[in-house]
Image (cartoon, rainbow, N blue to C red):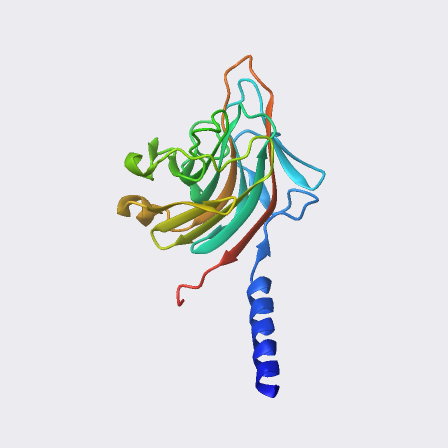
Length: 222
């Protein structure tokens, strides 16, 4: 009995320690810890969630974490308030050199796809190379699925370890993508970013929401 008690205490302590390693990236109240690095004024906090708005003619915009991350486990929930909008979550991303009057350059890096429109044949959870204009998940591995729920909160889990990125959507494993060596060498570390894809002039506004964004860094010694 004493041994079982000690083992139980050990298990509880381990679980508490693991849970304490999680960092809440969004405090549910304001955008502290985040910076809009392209167009401004597209994100706000409402009812404990970050609301992003795609505005007519504004173009693609990003809300980026102020801290960079290398190897980690990331979880977040997102809901397409309007399923016409296309979105994604950047990981290990950077900004390129600003051009002209730009305050920040273009965001580049791996993106966890979050796409609406076609829920019967969806590509959410696959990895796109933002600003690289190419998918990092090979075409033959991007099999359409029905994991994304229309009009509901969707739970994503992402594990980035070395050049491997594995994604889950609503408890379903989507894919493990091997990031090409030339891309991993430039983006082995970087910020987390919430993306709102640009929309055609004369359309919208369209909205997307995020909440419960948390991250747990993975030590390179593990």
